[in-house]
Length: 400
Image (cartoon, rainbow, N blue to C red):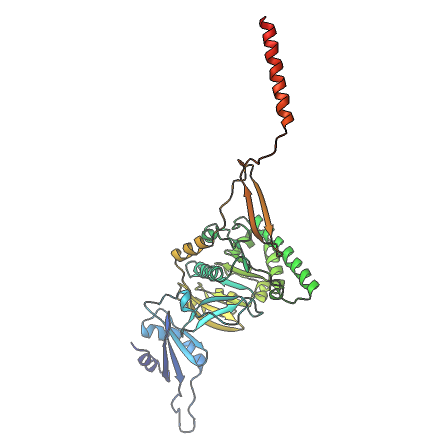
């Protein structure tokens, strides 16, 4: 049944305005109308937006949809899931201009690009949460793909922490990695402590030269990606304190965090994390309580999964369809940005040259089988000849 007929049957006086065909939903803009006269002395009353929202389940049943999402954003919009959603690629999302560290996320329900700038105060770090299979890992892959494709290792370094050992393994050969992909909880703690030391060192250098941001110092930015944050928190109580320290002071020093978890509980996403992660993404979750833990409001429980997400940025909620990057594209990008093959140093002599930023610019390897030609003194030869002659003379005397 059409939406207009359903609204009439439910006695919801609204007129359908614009219709937008988005990548994952069809959006219908409603113009709220008036209830008819109750009596001659009672003026007509315009229908309240909340009363439309409260009838979402009835509207979904009427049109034969599993659920509908009603939002009050530049008008009242009803979003109905499409039977076949469109795949959003990285090329479909326009590159943002004027961003210090842009990260493209996807397209809105109206087809507008969704991006954040991790170099700006509104979104220095990013929290991603959602149920298994909702699109969380695909979102992380697209973020890494976008960053590696855009920046060189001299401009951007990555630190990846993956306690599950499988999600980030495909990126283990990237030359952008500051260290190997971390899978141990204890190693993760050491890595976070080292990052804090590096952050403090950067602040000392910035204070010395009068800089207020890492962009003025022309240093590489560091993006720390933790795939399953809840697992680290449960195994190591020091992890939340270290993450909070980096989140509080990391932006100006060029250190940014991307946390992902499939367990949006209050003991994992606490008040400290929320305060330091103003940019948050919620993919499909089981209950409205989970949605409120992530976004401070319900709504994520009505998402359709497979990359359908809500972005909280600057207090505003934006629904979007996430970018999908296939495995072949990721493998091709990694092959083009591999670390140099390890060298068997067995006896070889290796010399390194570094630039003023501390990055290696040249490596000279002298193989172990290389023999340097040296000038041999003739005295040694004379001594050998004399010894041989004496031995021959002694043999002749013995024979006589």
